Image (cartoon, rainbow, N blue to C red):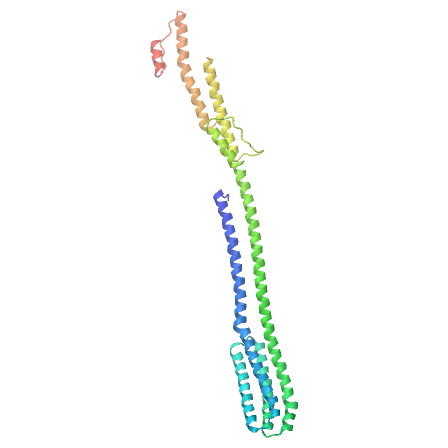
Length: 344
């Protein structure tokens, strides 16, 4: 299907708009991906890490209080320390419960949380046993429990808890990396689309410009100037027609010039012949086409209409001059030619 100039221009505009829309959609999609990752980090990962940090702080306080009881001999102070230890334990369990309720991310996270709680329970059993001996002033037994039971339990809990924290850090790092990759990928795709759109628009524009110039056959200003010259009656204009050009506006104008020039030449030749008295000269109508041919045929017919009565009158006058009275002219003439016929 052959497109009009307006359709081609509209195609360029629509192509550019389409590229902009695609770039915008890619940007929106990638931005949404980054936003989702950031929202997940803000709503799950970071608060989860904060809850684990709270649990770790409570655990460190709990251990500090437990160690400090080794230097306390007063039962009342030991009771106070025991309350503080239980408060730290409650704070830690509360942080774990909050994490388990709101911030579990996947099955691995769930298993790590279970390992934290299980190892903490073992440690708390050892700690309770330690405090029991301290309250009974059995310091040696308390120290033995601390070394043989509490210390290994603490090591296991620390290992489990550290693994849990590292897993959260890993998830956070992966999300941050994914967000950065999504942003980078979105930027790269946007630039590729922008470059392709720009190159496509430029190429389309070049093709359109060449197509328009090919249809016109030359620069529009030159064509307009030539058209004005022709309109003012200057048929000496020569169009700059490219080799093989048969379909452009310039080629069509060149054919118009040649047709009008041929008609003018024949008309001038007939006028000159008439002025020289050669009234039998006629223009060759085969040189012309369409309405131009009708014009030349009309001129020929006009001359025929003029020369017919004149020839008849001349023939009768010649015969009268020779003393031979000719018959009356019976051909039908109009206007002044009819008056001439009647006079003869």
